[in-house]
Amino acid sequence: MSWLLEEVGRARAYVEVPEVVGKQRARSSGRGRFYTPRKTRDFEGRVREAWLEQVGDEWGEFTGPVTVSVAATRELARSNPRWWAGRQDTMRPDGDNDLKAVLDALNGVAYADDAQVTLGTVEKMPRTPHGSGSRVSIRCTYYNETFEKE
Image (cartoon, rainbow, N blue to C red; front, top):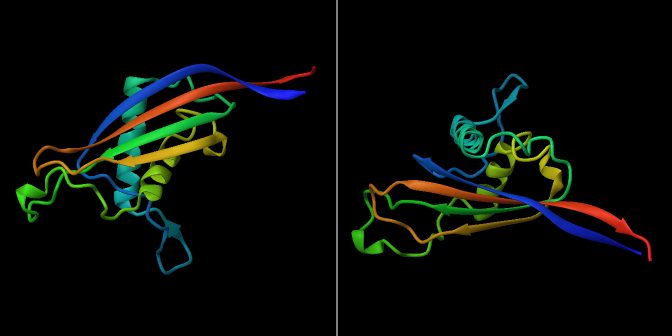
């Protein structure tokens, strides 16, 4: 007896963003109300819109296992020397925060719930020159899980 995974589909989207933003902590208004910071909300909205434009909502109600791969490319700040272009991106936000922001943005659009994500990877690409723009590449792979009696 064993469980078998069968790949049933793949989807990919590219998102041009003014800034790659990792998931930020919820903030308190001071009156007991919590809210998501504007930068995170805007970033998640752009990711969601780009996914819907490029892929649509065909996978939005998918309930099987999903793997998600994110590649984030950030441009250098204007204040950084030009010769820094091509350096590895070791700056904040952390890669896990980048991944969490994308997973939350795709809830109900690329899958029913981010609890279905069995493997999530993030790659922070080398920095690009100022003015070249920042972007995020997202790949999702969908699986059906079946139980096989022997």
